[in-house]
Image (cartoon, rainbow, N blue to C red; front, side, top):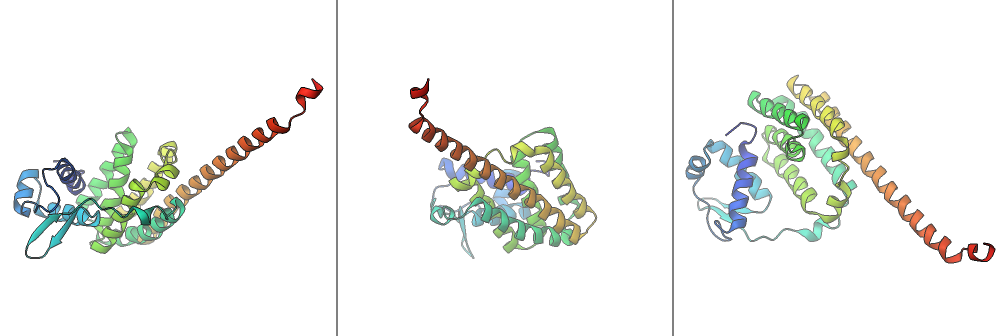
Length: 243
């Protein structure tokens, strides 16, 4: 398995097995050693995947007992009350500090995986997946499980909240080249082990995104005003009297 896939690919594979019923709710996942053999990855990679699955509320880790599959009970009621602007601001604050911390702790292997995501974005091979993996690799590189949990939770919210999904729709795909340049700037700062530059590059990335969200919101509002004005004009028009 290529380095670029590692733990997040394992997360997706285990999620698929859970969703298919092979690992039903209440069941215990196979031991770490067995999972590592089945997926042909290292045991640390399995541990990273389990942490991510726990953050996504797919499993529960019971010390001394094992890892158990949870019922699908996502907290949608909380997500509905959070706007895309709030989510983006929170991501900027948290991921900016994650990038600054990762600059001091990231490994050469992780830098290689980050570079591979840039290659995928440039080639246009599933850019959204590569984008997500880029951010999660950085969060993992902090060596702080709480940071990884926070970033993973915000990503889960982005992918499951209807209001956030609607706001983000089209905004990211319309600026692939800018997103790639911003990711390269973050990557270069991490390569140089420059915490301040990494933080600044991450903040610039999210600043452009939140401005794009505002522009899209304003465009939708303007279109709605035009629609209402047109309806009012048609209702009160005197054109039929003067024609």
